[in-house]
Image (tube, rainbow, N blue to C red; front, side, top):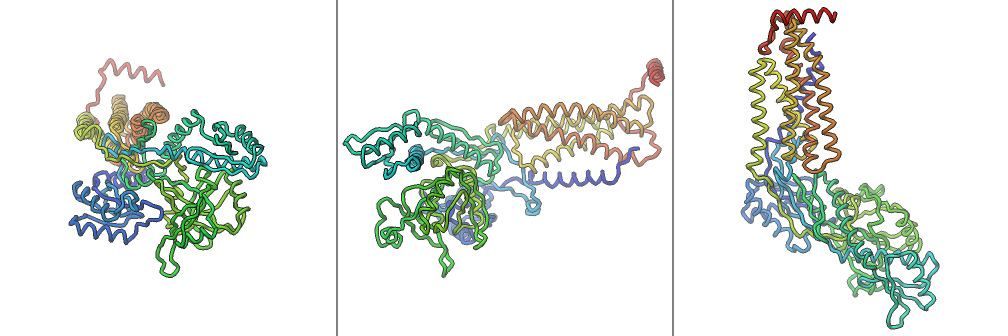
Length: 640
């Protein structure tokens, strides 16, 4: 009657082992560290970088607890925060002699002290929110001048396309400062251009040149200018949200501050160097034709100046003889064919012919039409794909146009697998409307202080201890079983939160304390039901079976209603409310498993093997008096 099959005990043992393994990392704490990551797409972090960091630390007399190349970054762990800060200054001086153009990102970090065997099993500690452990705070300045310039460049390209489609030929269009100039040979062509622009681009206002020249000057209307600035902020905030989601940061705070600044707070983030890299990079693509003139080729060889209307960019390449990575110049025209705004998808992959890492790009219909027209008109010519990061451009590749292009094409060149993945991530998350510069960076301490954090943990611990003492004193052996089930519930709850890499906040700790109370409530219902069956004269084995069987419906109903309330908080809440709701919902599920399935397994293991059970240790069972006993007997007979 009260015996579990072997497979149920196997489930209990497996869940107990999983709970222990994934809870353990939370007890090892974190070590202060310095992390070195690539600051550019063309920068590689490899064994040479590791050797440079090790040499710099040795020369400065700074001792690291461990120094290793982990993935695409170098991490150095230290015993104290003072040593960590000193090491950061030493490494920055060694790797980034030019702070205005850093090739590497050196950032303070906290890394888990978990043993290697736990990390191999994928066991990681759960994150702590800003109110418990703190996090990273960034203040970013949006370059509004560049936002306006980018929008004008896009409009200039649209004007050229519109004029060609409407049959208005030989009308040069160029951007000059914060205006677009449209020149014509005669007044008729100028008037035709005016009609096309006025009817299609209502955000621009047109003025004729004052000196009698056949020229129109297009500028933004005041309301359109404000709209461009507002859209730049909104697009950048949306892009930052997408990038932070790609990083897997829980509950970030990204909001506008003032007219041109954005605040980013990453609670409980561990990979601060990666976060700084992803947030601070502009990652905007531009596609331009290479200047194939004689002056352009001479400028590439360094034998002459850059022609008017062109620009020089550096492009990473591999020396075919030595295999070393080198940079060579490429001269491209200023006219932008396509920007990253037209991108709809970017995925990393490998070139089927060279087996080199690449990024497959997909553009929208308008971008595909532009690419088809440009590729038809410029066969056997080169087209450069330029990546702009932090206001500086770098040519990724400059392939020869071999045929008509469409909506899909690729970027390939001197990229590693990690660099291709990072580039695809940045482009897929969305291009920034304007470059942003990190003007403030700091690590935030716990907002409620270490004393309040200790009180939060103590409240859970002492609440657990008091519940255990009461249950053991009131229900004896069954109280001990209930206390073990409660401990198992807490173990599972912490393990699940760690597996999900959830962010624990003070409201989450309050939900944890509430989960303990609800879990023990289920055991109280079961124990009281067993007592009631014993008072009614049931045999001990029958009382245990009926207690668990009949209390289950009540436990399920009460937990389902609480779960519905938790899901509502999760769906409609935000910030601390969501943190509470996550722990609350997970706590309900783990409490139902531990209070019923686990505790019954303990009871069956202890009492189920005894065939002739005379009594159970469940505290004082109140016996009804003669009058009450007679009434109960009459009620039972009537029921039969």
